[in-house]
Amino acid sequence: MPGETELNILLTLDYEVFFGRNTGTIERTLLQPSDALCRIARRYGVPLVFFVDIGFVLRLYEEGQRFPPLMRQYDAVMKQLEDFVASGHELQLHVHSHWEDSRWNGENWDVDTRRYRLHDFDSAGVLDILRRYTHGLRELTGGRDVFAFRAGGWVIQPFTQIGTQLREVGICIDSTVFAGGTSDSETHQFDFSRCPNDSRWFFKDDPLVPTPAGDLLEVPIASIQLSPLFYWRLALAKKLGGALHHSIGDGKAIALSRNDMLRKMSRWTTSVVSMDGYKASFLEHAFAQYKKEEKTDFVVIGHPKALSRYSLQMLENFLERHKTEKFVGYGAYLDLFPS
Image (cartoon, rainbow, N blue to C red; front, side):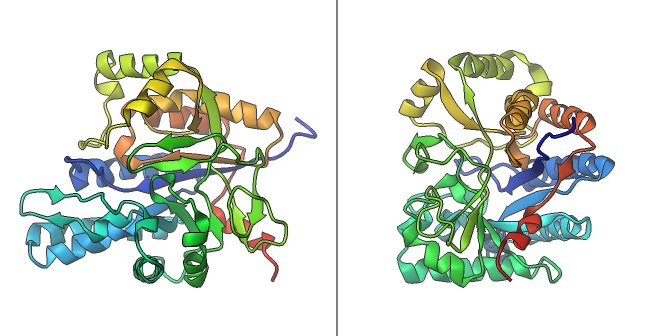
C-alpha cells in the first residue's frame, strides 16, 4: 500500500552441526538441508546469508589429516560453501570457540564445551581465534569481504571483552541480539532485556546502547512474544507430527536448562523469529507485526540442522506471498558507514 515502510528482509542461517553428544552427520545436518534451502531461494531469486561456524570447518580439516573420511567430509563442506558464494549468497562469521578444544576420537566428536564462550579466552586468544577464523572464511568468498558477525549461542556480552578484536579483523556489523531475549543456561548466557525496540542502530561499547557516533552497526534478529501454549504445541508436533516435523539434521542439540524450559512452558517469553522446525509457523505473523510497526529490517534466523519438511514449506509459502518484497544481505548496510 502507498506510504508503507519498505522492509529489508534478511534470511540468515547459522551453518553448524549439533554440539551435544551427537553432532549429527555432515550429510544430514549441513549438506542436505542447505541444498534444499538453496533450491527454494533460487526459485524466488532471494539471497541467503550463511553465518559459517568456520572453527568447525578448520577443525574438520585438521582432524582429516589423521582420519581420511573426515577429509572427504571437509571437501564436501568446502564445495557447498563455494557453491553458496557462486550463487550470490553471503558468508559471514559465526564463532563457536569450543572447537578449539574438541577432537575426533575415531568414531565421533568429543565435544568439549567448557570454553563454549569466546569470552572464556584471554584477549590474545580471542584475537588469534578471530584472525584464523576470518582468514579461513575470506579464502572462500572469492574476494568478497567478511564484515558481519553473529556470536555463537548469542553470547556477545560483555562486548568490551571482544569488541577491540572484532574491529581488528574487520567486523563492522553485528547481528546477534534480539529484543527481549534472555538465557541463563550453562553455555548460553545473555540478557537482551534492555535491547532497543528499533530496526538498527550504531553502537560503540555495548550492542544494547545506541551511540550515533559509534563505529559498529547492530542489525538485530527479529523477535516475537510467544505464549506457553506455543511450546506445548511444539512438543505435540514433535511427538505426533510424524516425518513432516522431524528435523532433517540427525544430531541432538544441547538440552535447555531446567530454568529455561520451565520459563518457556509456563509464561510468555521472547523468541527469535525463526525458520526452524515448528517455529516457522509464526513467520507470517511476525512479518505482519514488523510491517505494522513500520520497522525497516526483518532478520530471520535459521539453522540447516533444524530445518524440517514443514519449515521448508512454511518458508516457501512466505516467499510466495512476499516475492515482491526486498530481500537483501548485510552488504546492503555498508553504505550507511561514512566513506
